[in-house]
Length: 166
Image (cartoon, rainbow, N blue to C red; front, side):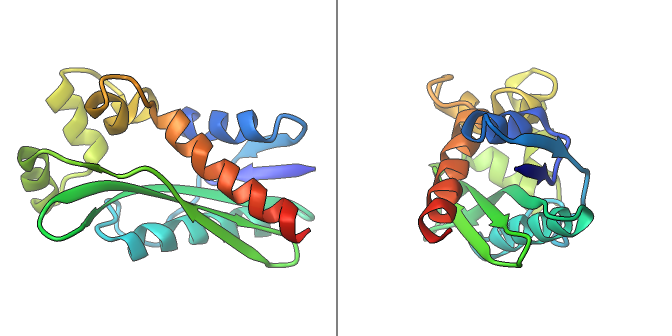
């Protein structure tokens, strides 16, 4: 089985490798087709689907997986959200979403100004490359849940659906 992941981000690639240890997993930098910082559940989900579709089309008989992080409002607080999509060679699409956590108001203001969460998190946490390491989820859960774990959960949801239907 060959899987193409629509990102060069190591947290996303390792999440797929953890859940599909028997697969040949490669990665491809593809566009999400949505804003650099998705700002709704629907937009984040669509970004994951777009990435997965492009990956599936990139190689014959490849399964495409797209993983997308975004933010969304539930009432007034702004939440971190994430979505994944798995697209089979015959075009069947499976989707799933995972953990959500409230983001601080100061992060929300930066996002409204058009900045990406990953960039804001570097300044907020006084670290570099938070998006390639623990992620916002890791910072705001005191490292109890990492970005890779969050995406691994989503990939489990994708694999479980795919196995059930195939």
